[in-house]
Image: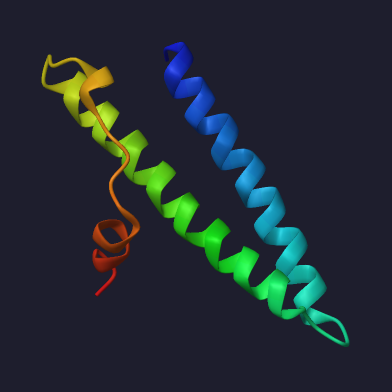
Length: 83
């Protein structure tokens, strides 16, 4: 695992912690504020982008290509994978 991959995993860990905290707050009364709901959606999208980037890097590496060629894809591309 190289430094860039460690950085991506570190970002994922931080985003997962933030997502959990927001979801925990949302489960209690009075729930999330509009700003917190917006932040939660942003965190979810960013997580999807990070996981996608990690998968791209690992696939490139597996096939003998340069993993640094992987790029963060736009949210609409990453989010469309779920449909």
